[in-house]
Length: 335
Image (cartoon, rainbow, N blue to C red; front, side, top):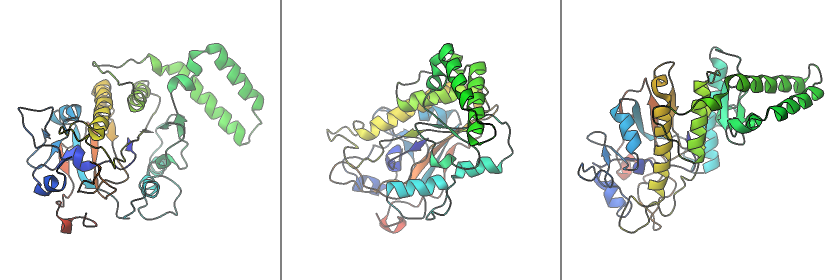
């Protein structure tokens, strides 16, 4: 999951023992854990960090030993341009622009091919994410229903006939045609739409929620999926991270984190035993974080480090990484 816009990691995973967190964020800092008021205060992870109260589902995953947090993550290029930083992160080339392939695309090319499935790599959305670009074809998928022509068998037969009419032998068009046929046949046989959410999972009616639901359907249909990418935008919170009414749990940040929490929690429940067998890993990342101090609009400006979440049957519960502290001398650019 790519959290596009630069997520404020200090609001997601609260460093509640850092006095400077509260001194520099008098109106937007989230409160230290208080078991008597769990909906309005941080959800304690350990002696240093707490989850945002909007991440109650993440806390459940933590308690079950399948969540790891990596704080103060970032890239050393120092760019605060969204597009430039996204490009560096998706290519896996901080500060470099020579490579046109993505880090996941290169990973797929370098690992043993488990299957020739056209669903080995999927990018949910209108275009394939840059992280997936490479020699292994990745498909862009808006929805399973649209790809399968919403189950209209007559329309599907007509579409196949039109493609056959365009088949030109051994050129690139023929290869693309065969790939489309293969994908359509696999979906037709596996019918992933029949795989209903399990274990009480209820997906929210959001782009992320419905996208993760379809990723779970593809996993359960055993179509050979190895990597899927999906985006969640809106994290560029220059203003109104908190509405300013005295309740820090009301504002853009809590709304965004709640949407993330609801979607990931549903996916977590739905996948069930598959976290361990065959093994599923979910990773969140953002192109950069926000500055430590709030601005005049109850928001934060572009900064450096953020945090990443990892959900996996193989996760080592804990907050990982080298936490530098929040004093000016400890920060990348002193802010």
